[in-house]
Every structure is written in structure tokens, then in C-alpha cells.
Image (cartoon, rainbow, N blue to C red; front, top):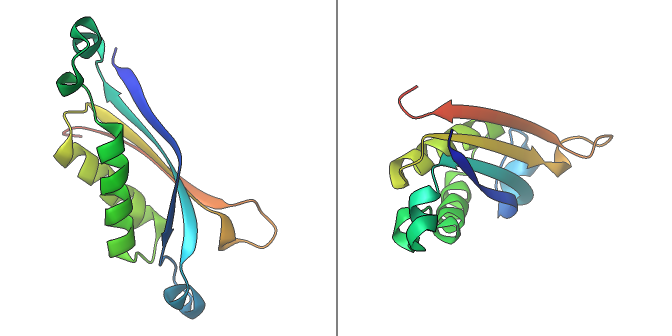
Length: 119
């Protein structure tokens, strides 16, 4: 069983959505990321090189989302998962995207995906 490296409530201001007003006004989205990675080797030697740099991961995710100007949060989630697999030796990833301004009568609309490497 692999351990989880987590990033919660990563706030990103970006262009996202299908409506005209959304294409012209940035909205804040929030992401929760869980990366499956065995942390025992890093912990055994207190070796940063053997774990996932979550600061770098969060910076890469933010840059991807800001540049992407996605219409769908589904696309945002898929591209985030693909980026994390490309950059880090993780076994699996869960990406949860929340868009608070999507619905007037709800706290947020969201999508959550789970992907395994090679799956």
C-alpha cells in the first residue's frame, strides 16, 4: 500500500467556464490533490530527493490551470493528473476541483477523478 502526499484547498484564480462572462472574468477554483507514493525510503533517510516536492507540484498545477483557460473543470482535472504523472514518480492521483461560483444555490460544483499510472 502506498502513502498519500496531499495538497488541500489549493486556490487558483483562472479563466474557466463555458459562459461568455466566465471567459472574461477570472474565477477562483480550489483543488485537493492526493498523490499515492511510498514515503518510506524518503523517511528512512530523511531524504527530500526521494519524495514528492509538493511546493513544486502546486506551482506547476497553478501555472497549468492559469495558462489552460479551460471550459470544463473535467478537463482541468484530467490535465492536472497527467501533469503530475509526467513530473513525479507517483503510482496514482486523485484530483478534486471545486468551482464556487458555478451555482447560485450551492457552495460549489465540482469534479473528482482518480487515475493510476498506466491505467
